[in-house]
Length: 113
Image (cartoon, rainbow, N blue to C red; front, side, top):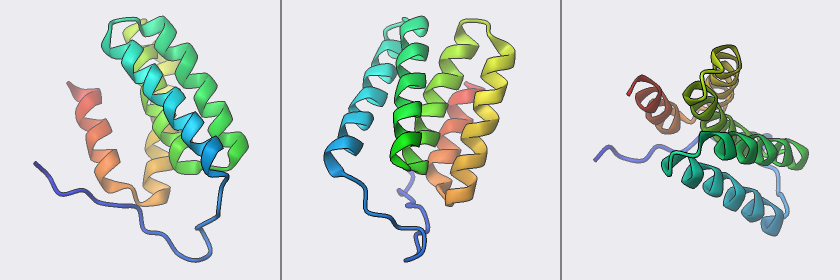
């Protein structure tokens, strides 16, 4: 198992967010991932896009990028190739910007699988 790598945070990028709101969005992202795992790509895409929007409203760039990874995979599963590519690019850009190398590697592996 690969070691976990955490994003590089500096005092200028670390912002205190409302914990309950962040946890609610994370729960929504996990529900989207669960739907995807159950083969329900349509519900996964809807839930991931809604969670991504909420993460953006909260200002959580990492959670927004993670939601985009789920949405990209679901859109690709549905044959929405243009939307999937746009979401994939968004996810990769967000994870790269944050230095989330472990999450980026996992997404690239999931995308190629």
